[in-house]
Length: 500
Ligand code: ADP
Ligand code: MG
Image 1 (cartoon, rainbow, N blue to C red):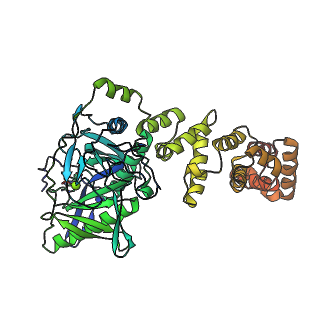
Image 2: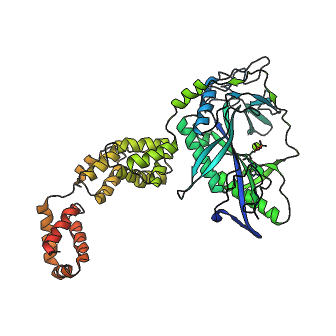
Image 3: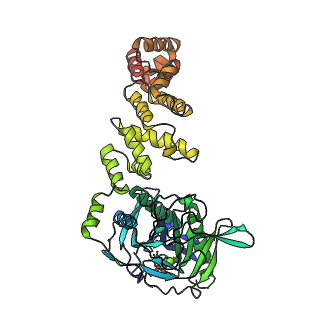
C-alpha cells in the first residue's frame, strides 16, 4: 500500500539497493537539508567590519556587531547581490520583495539578543538542483527557499577550565540558508547534493566553499519510512561540516530510528548533535524544549525591494554553470559524460583542462588529465590547483603523441619523468634528454625485424598459418628497440616480410 498524501513528498522512492534492511523488513531514509553557506564578501551583512579567516580575537568587530546601544544595521548591497546570484544559479524564483525578521534568543555570543534573519519573506523562493550520482545517473532536488541571515559569534570553552571566552569576529557575517525539500533518499544522495551545491556556489563565486574553514555546514533532517509510505517524524542533526561526517551521521541516525520503530517505539522530533569521535548522534533538545523565537519584522531595516532590471543584469553576467559546462564539454570536446563530470566538478579542473586542450586532441588531453594527473594528485590528497605541472606541459605531452614523436606507451615514461621533475623540464626536453624519441627510421626498424625473424624460423613459419601469431613478433621488435619503434611501421614491415 502506498500513501503519498504529503504535498511535500516528491513521490520518488529510493533505489532498492539503498534501502536499509531492518529486522522486520526494508526501510527508506527521507531527508531534507538546511545548508548554511557563508557569503563570499569582504564585509559583514549589516556593518562595514571586515570578514576574514585567521584574525586575532575580536579584531573584526564593529560597534554594530557588538550591539552597542543605539547602533543601526545598514544592509550590505553586495551580499544581496550574492544571494540573488545564488538564487539564479539554483534556477529559483527571486522574490522582488523580501524582509528581515528578528529571531529572539539569548546566548553569550549573540550580543544583540536576536539574530536578524528572513522567516516570512525570504529573498529567494523555490528552485531546483540537478544532482549526479557516482554511477552517472542523476536526480533532482527541489529547493524550498534561500534566505539571508547573520551569523553569531563564537564561544570558546576550551581555553580556560573556569571561563568561557567570546570572539565576535564571526558575529554579523552574512550567511545564506538554503533549504531543500525532503527529496533525498539515501546518505549517498545527501552527500552528492551537498557536493553539487558547493560546486554551484563556488562557480558563482558566492561562497568560498572551504569546508575546513566552516564556509558551509548543514543541518540534516532525517526520518525513516517503509518504502513509499507516509513520511515519518524527523530529527534534525545540527551543523554537519564535512562530507564524511554527513554520511556517518545520517547512517547512524537512520539505524537508531529504525531500531526504535522496530521495537514498537515512536520517534520524538528533536534536535541532535553528531559526535565525530564516537560516530553517533546525541539528543540536544526535544520539541518541547524548542525555543519560541518570537519572530517579528526588524523595525531597524526597511523591506528589500528589487528592481527587475537589476535582477536581469545579474542574470546577464552569470558565469557558465556546472550543468551547462558539462553539456558543452560533451558537445565541444566529444568527452564522455563521465569525463565531463570529473572535469567540471571543480572550476579549477575545468579551467586547467580547457587551457591544456586548446588546439590539441581534446579527448586525449582529458584522458591524461583524469587518468594520470588527477589520480596522481589524489594519491597525496591534492587537487588540480596543487599540480606541479602546468597545463602547457600536458598539452606538450599530447602534442608529442599526436605528432608521432613518442608512442602512447613511451608517453607514460615521459609522464613519470615530468611528475618526478615537478614541471622543471618540458616534455620535449625530457624526450630529448632521455633519448625517448620514437624510431620511425624504417632502416633501423627493418634491421631489428630481420634479426628477430632470422632467429625464430619456426615462429615465422607459424605466422603464415596463424596470422594472430604476428603479435608475438611485434612484441619482440618493440622490446629490441626499447619500446621506441613506431608500432605502425613495425606492423607494416613484419606483414611484408612474413607474407601476411
Ligand atoms: P524547521 O524550520 O522547523 O526546521 P522546515 O519545515 O523548514 O522546518 O523543514 C526543515 C527541513 O526538514 C527541510 O529541509 C525539509 O525538507 C525537511 N523535512 C521536512 N519534513 C521532513 C521529514 N518528514 N523527513 C525528513 N526531512 C523533512
Ligand atoms: Mg530546521
